[in-house]
Image (tube, rainbow, N blue to C red; front, side, top):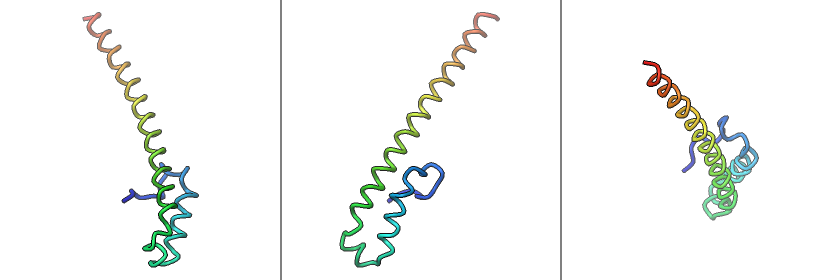
Length: 80
């Protein structure tokens, strides 16, 4: 199960998600017989890559923020 697909965080996967939507629009039997599995795999891989990149950026921002907080605490401790 995927999160909401068409969001601002998933813009790079728009073409793959559109292909999956078009495949699903062909009908239940087409979808149920596994004809959309490859498109679904591609969406999953694309969303995973986007999530990993977003996580990496968040981690870097958290490290920078933590570093600045530690520097402030160091200044406070040095200047009572």
